[in-house]
Length: 121
Image (cartoon, rainbow, N blue to C red; front, side, top):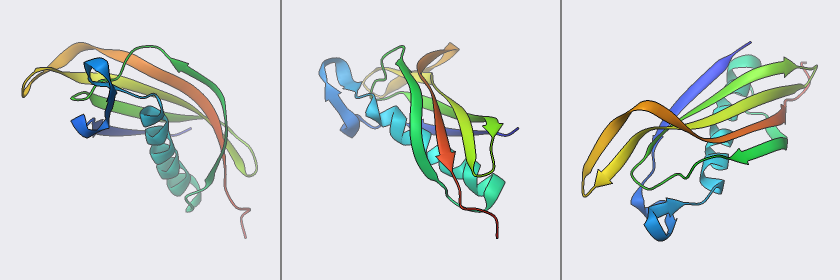
């Protein structure tokens, strides 16, 4: 199977809540981006997201974080690919412009979902 990883800095413009918290939809959008690369690599097509089977918000995501987003294909059908997703905080802002690399990444969001691709010609 295949695993694809993206990293993304969370800008302060995405903070919606007190404490510079970012809404959960931010990670779900990143899951869509990494799933697109999975489909391109496997099928030469961007594919379409069909559904999420499970989404777990496990820890907060904050502006100033660096997220590592992974997508691992766990099952391949004729046109569908079931994917396990994980969003981990690997760096966190500590105030002002200061930040630190975390010794242990924080698992912020996990999910599983299904994407579909066109039939092979």
